[in-house]
Image 1 (cartoon, rainbow, N blue to C red):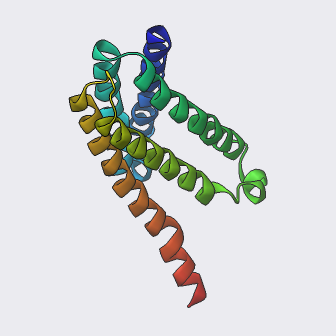
Image 2 (tube, rainbow, N blue to C red; image 1 turned 120 degrees about the vertical axis):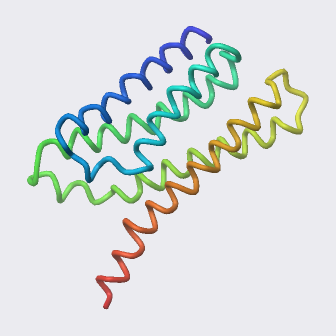
Length: 156
């Protein structure tokens, strides 16, 4: 399992290249605080995870995240085909909901681990818990601004 966690860590390094490409292509509108925070902190968080606690708990978090990323990159892959695909991409808000669900699952999981007899260090559980809460706050804000306020504007 530790080896799989290392491969997952390397996938986070590759995902950081999104940010680098946005900078090189001057796509500043896509360089939001959420994007930069998420991609840069994941590198450090996963480095610590695989260095100190690679195994079952880390594996579960990586597995959930990988499943969400399969759906997310399917969306981005379809979107790359251009405007002709727009009518098939109505489910973007549900993708954000799936990302939020992922963070809630991780938060619940780490909360449980804090009270269960588990070899995973409480300090790492607390770090994952705090990080998950930060992502819930940021992704909820993104969801609100992207989908709920736009819906209200359409109604008026």
